[in-house]
Image (cartoon, rainbow, N blue to C red; front, side, top):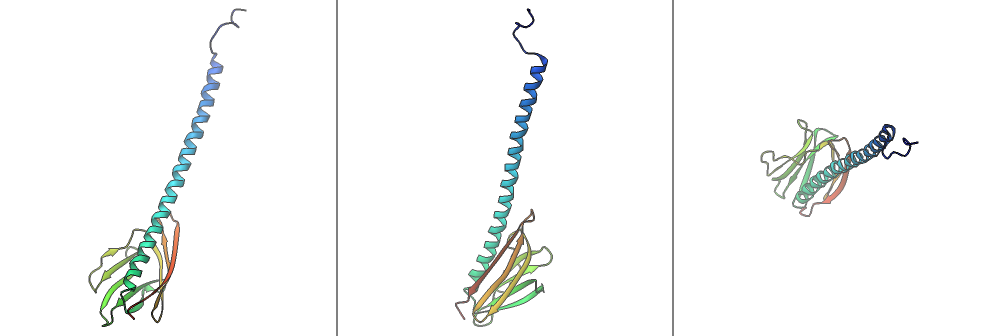
Length: 160
């Protein structure tokens, strides 16, 4: 039979090859998109952790120069502020939670607001105090994708 010995592809074979190629391409695209989402989530989490570390470092550097610290509610006990003073009682540094943008702000020597430290929303900023120790009881940040980062530390004031 001459039609069986003809070289070439039938329409059915072509449809099967196209369908299999489409499935392989969908798998590759799905893997790529999943990898991108994972990378983006990790990057956003890393940014929030970096901002938390920056806030802690800023506070720690200022506390080591201070002789006394006074904490206050800003506006309530869930989000507080702290004022650091030298031995003469002059203000060296201030850090507080700003209700207008939900970010931590800073100022030095009683001056104007330097602006926010970072861009991640701050849900909690709580301090504790015991003699020459200042405790950052809880700093909780929320990233732009909703992941939370919590940090706490205790710092000793050397100039007490």
